[in-house]
Length: 92
Image (cartoon, rainbow, N blue to C red; front, top):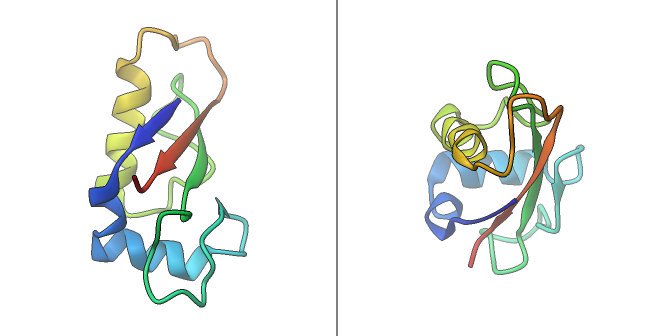
């Protein structure tokens, strides 16, 4: 599933999370040395729609994670039986 969310990348809490976790397991092309997220700072996370919002990066800012989980759950392509859905978050 792809989510285009440039506003998330300009959110200070998300930008801080991205900066602190790049290269530490977060699936992203963002380079920690970059001053701010750019057009190649895509992020990939896994969400378990059958759970209570668990996933690979559920420790990111709560207001962002809740939107990701809701987007997965509201997509009719994915059901409660799916174990994990990969979500591609794009800054453009």
